[in-house]
Structure formats: structure tokens, C-alpha cells
Image 1: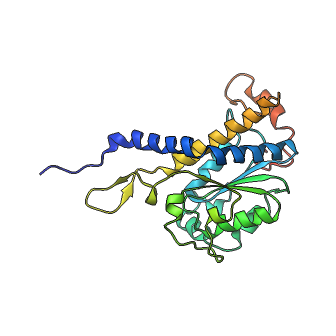
Image 2: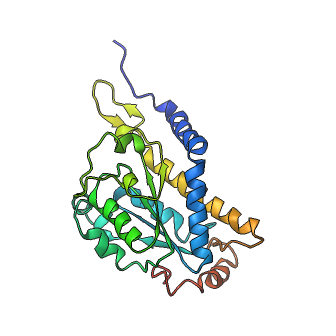
Image 3: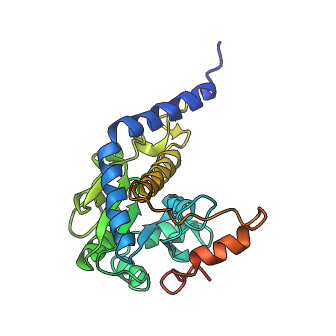
Length: 250
């Protein structure tokens, strides 16, 4: 009897296919997100990034990294992440009122732009975060899987998915269950995909913002690695204009 195994050697091609779909099909919303963020920054505002659970990695990917933009405000809450309690974080992202509590401390200003990432888009916190930000006059960009979201019932009290309440929707093209393989003999999926898609989208938006600077004859505010000669000195100057509005730049 031939042993059934996962075709793990095709994982690369599966992820490439997903990223290629993003590149081919999501140009319009990624351009719109970049333009909104660029205009926010040019008008003295910020690009905020918020998420929960594993999706919070998009926040860390965009903030204070070599080659990254300076005027990005990471909105991270320990209770909504995994490192202080994974089960608790799952419960908290379903709690009404938590989004307003977290975003109320995030220095949001009218005219800013915020990216909210949620793979399923069904939980209460991401949906309420989008509504809260819109009430404050922000442009709301969501990164989500339409394939997953469309098949799941929303948990928010208003019965809406994140994509339903956002201004700009970018599909990360992650498959249902967030796995590219099915374990032989089961209905369990494995081979996580959503993180690759969401972080790819994050970097594409950053590059597009930087090109908007360059098209207007400006040098985009980009950080250098703190581990190369002169990096600390360069970054100290780069963040000086934003330290009062971005608490994490301490």
C-alpha cells in the first residue's frame, strides 16, 4: 500500500500562485490604498496599521524596519495578540467595545489612513475598528480573504464583514481554512498561506507610496538598518518629526 503524504514540495508553487493572483488582480485597490496613505502623510497625518491574532504580523512588518516608511503607526494590543495568551486573544477579538478602547489611544486624526488586516473578516474587533476609524474621519483599508469571508457568518452585532464596512478592500487570496493542502484521509487543511499574502500586500503598498513621493520629486522617508554603519544616526533624524504622534517610536 502506498503511503499518502502531503505534497510539501509544491508548497512554493502554491504560494507563488497566490502571490501572483494578488499582483495581477489587486493592483487597483493597492494603488488606492497607497494614494490614500500618501495624501494622509503629505497633509501631516499618518498611516496606521491594526490587526489581531496572527494577522498582527502585518503591523510589525510595516513598522520601524529597514527600508520601511517612517510615518506608520503600529496599533498593537497584548490582549489581541498571541504571546500573552492565545486562547484569551481569540476571545478578546470577539468582544464588542474592545476596538474603541484600543483605537481610542492610537492618536487617530481626521484625514489619516488605517490598514486593518483580518483573514476571515468576521470577528467583532476588526469590524468595530473599521467603523470607529470611519467615524473619526479616516480612510479604512482592509486586507482580507474574500474566499473565506464570503463563506462564514459574521460575528459582529451589525452582521457585517470587515470588507463590508471598509473603504478599500484588498484580497489576500488565502484559501478557505488558510491552508494550501488537505491532510490525506481528513478534511484538515495545513500549509498556512495568509501571512505571505498579507505581508506581500503590505510591502507592495509601501513601494507604491514611495513611488508617489518620487513622482513628485521627493525623497520618501525611509529607515535604514540600525545594524549598518551610520544607521542609528540616520534613523534618529528620520523619526524626529514623528515621535510625538507615534508612541512606539520611543
